Image 1: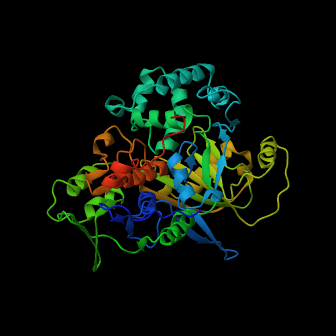
Image 2: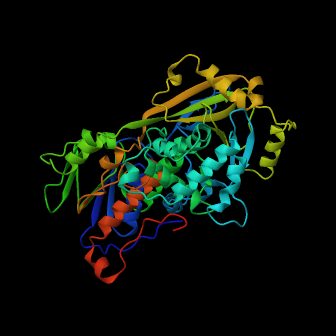
Image 3: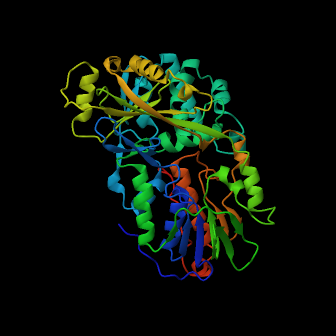
Length: 495
């Protein structure tokens, strides 16, 4: 599907420079070019995609090369803007929806969680509380009370100022419910511990991601490398729509003192445009020279510099045999939080066969030299397992307590990818430091770190890009007077 190019009828904003080629920058560029604006994208690296990237590994025995994502990224059914971007990029066939979630308790008890038929939201998830592993009846009742309370919680200054853990403790959540239910959901969704995550961020994820719509909790999983989807293929789409894409073009200075144009310098080149979308990570804002500006971007860079980071670690492992056949596993109360096998496509009958295997029914599989599984551990700022020599033993022991087949498997090799600045910490303090998109009427910010209402997610990044484009397009007097204001940002499911 190609974006239809609208005629360039915008007399106010005719050209825009987008600095940064991550999801926010890609989203802003596509939204603007769709409405007839000439767009130049300046990306400092040799590829698009930002933190959604991949790397190549070579198998030592065969010499074959394999493309692996730095860390597994997934969307959810509630990610309406991410799905719109995927459609704009003509990539619907490269994402698969997992309508059932596969959870394993600390001792390996398996539960398949799905929506109950016919029941409306939020009752569609009633079965979750009955099946959730590792909880007693008292724990389940406390979780039910907590979910009812959080479903109507307003997302305001008061809830942003509280930590989720303090609220849960005040609202009678048991220790086991906090560890086995709330932490399992929140740490993975927010990339932060309950003791540091704001209550509003937790409420946002639960309300939009689970409670308002029957399909909101579904996982949206890429079936091709992210470096290909948001790197190579996204670049092809931008160029196909006449976007002037400049890779390996880090920006050194931005001058917007003139009322007529904005000037951006990259290396020995200068670029000018009517408007600008600055879509780089928050921790890179301070590396750009803003001239004599002290009240605009320079102040934003100073404020955003106070945002704390939270690390997410992807552990890439290769084993001598297959020990897990489901498309994913969420593990309750363990070091290893999620497991994603290579080639996690859902095949007809595969889940049934995998369930049989969990019960000890053998299923013959063709022999392969190596079998890949990615293990994801969120909020790893204080975890130093990635730097120790016994990481292989930690992984083997932890997984072996959940999956008996791991005990007979041999971990051939592993590679740890941990970015200390994977996401910003969605702490109570972050609410005051996340800026609104507009700096001036013709200069916008985009990035998941802006005030999107979402934590650091692909959905938040895409929303920020769409919203920056919307605000620039609303400067067009002809649109304001003679046609509806552009509406690019999609509302959440159930609203």
